Image (tube, rainbow, N blue to C red):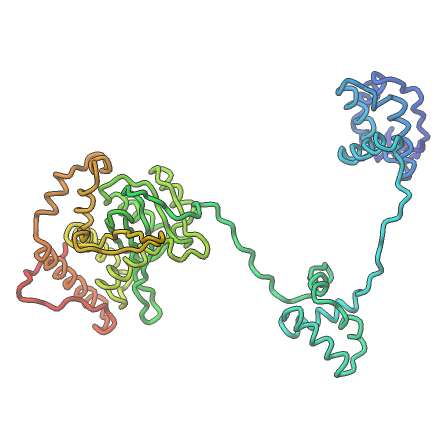
Length: 456
């Protein structure tokens, strides 16, 4: 076998050997031990056969000479394979395929069969015409592009389009994937969707246990090119305990501290945190915080718009009803958040009744929800009505502590206090930001029966 060596770079004495084509006689290598000694000589030398046919012939001779197929020790087979790879420069996978052919056919030789090949029907000039058409028309659909090229040929008599006009729509897309097309096309490729593995796509199933939260954001309008504040609305699906907060903008700096504060305001143990697929909640920072608190995170499924329907309803019935759609400056988000924490959240959970459904199943198995009068309760009353409700409370929180808040005022008395505080809040916003009253959300008018109290 005629073998040539790869260039050696060890010393000047080896340079003449590097450029020579050698006639190597491996007849002295007759055992596995001889191969071991040969492989130890210089692992830096790599040999390549002159022709592929000669290479296959030599491999067949080596496999026969050392009785590779009859070797029982796996270690001996490995040594022969290593010897073949070193001498031929083949990969391990290529060597495996050749040995498999030797085992099946009795000889490791090149196949004499010719592979089917097809003449190239659409060459570079045809692809250039396709590129030109796509660039001029901003890459229309395949059928529309073909129609244009057919019209160029048949109606306007441009013979250069005769061949490419016969192309099938499916093969037209194949040509769009070629290197020559993509190198000359000016069409912007669509952005590939990002797969985000944070959160599981699932609808939470609380099974009547509190601690399953739904969350969403509500933007409080724009004014003269300025973004308004953002409400963060979080609600428990089972007991409808709702906590709201307000931040200047959706960013890690503002959102993470507010989220932690909101989660701390829930009296029961938290199990699940569910949101839509917005990046404000589906990110590594929020995921790390929830993981630290041992709260599982889920996100809405594709084409299931009702997965987060509970908190969407609360956005309309609570946030929009009490704050409206008007503009609230981002600079006033801290004052709004103080109002939420001191007045609004207490009002929502201890004094404002919510409708809790009762599911009726008819004879055909169809279910529907009704809302009987006796099931209207405040979130706190619903929490107390659960069986063994104490087991759901966070450590350090008791019903005695919560009872003091619930019994401190009547619903109407606390509603008056909350409305008066909101009136003061919006007057402060209007005065400090010089915003027309028509831009601000509508707030409750002053009443002589409401005793005024101011925000701290």
